Length: 409
Image (cartoon, rainbow, N blue to C red; front, side, top):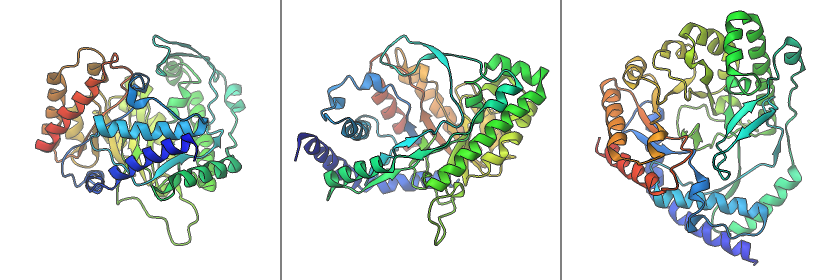
């Protein structure tokens, strides 16, 4: 047994012990109840964290030499670090997930950009994208991706992991969580200012862009279905728990998961400044053929949606709606009124410098009160944390504070 195998076996045994704890099933049931609109208490999770800062601590130092096994080690160490420091309502499943050796999952997007960094170890950077869809000819030139899986490499990696984790934990290939937000991709191919001007000056041109990206995304989805890449066992969708009893199960004889069996997430973040009517016209209606392929949708991200709940209702399969730091949570809860999960996104800037418990507690308590008054399921998702200024204790303190509040709520 070589040293890499020994390292992973030890980590796997530690993870397996945690996965066997009764609390894992308890958390699954809490997520399921909340996602199925029968809340027991608000749910809490943390994601999109500054791992470039967390990785500087001894707990995250990698020891494996093989490149692939180092990636497996990193994934396990991330889970163990989360569990020790800020478990929130995370669930540790009794399995090792490894990704497919997947190629060309680009959703038709092939960006050209310049970047600026303030911390060279941070993958959160500033982007300046080259405009690639300024004319109808540019739209026509957009190509459909041909997705493929390196099956030989998949087999080799699976065999290695099965040998290492034999008798410790099951190993499986994880599937993908489909990103159905075409506007995120369009905004990396044409500037936001140009898009907003086009909506006024060239509405037919914008419609053509959206329809092309929807067609490309549907082609991508069809290929993912055919290759069996969708994941009905996904734990998280857009940084929130995905456990639910409301997705259609796979039918007898169904060989691979279909889109109706899984969650996806969609959004139109650059529509922060457009009216509800325009948001409906250029996202809800045009992207509907893609959104409604899925069993359930998490809708929204950074765009404030408190005054747009009525248009989101027109999608038949939405289950969670984002309330970003720029949204009015009181209006959002009143307009949702128990029909969806309100996904609260506290401002990550409060964790960047001089974290104080007072600000975090106020945001969470107010959200709990207004959601309770409107019989609305609530989840509190601390995400988009690009830095804590290397004060790793800020993350631990936020988790302990918020979990204490929701458990007493």
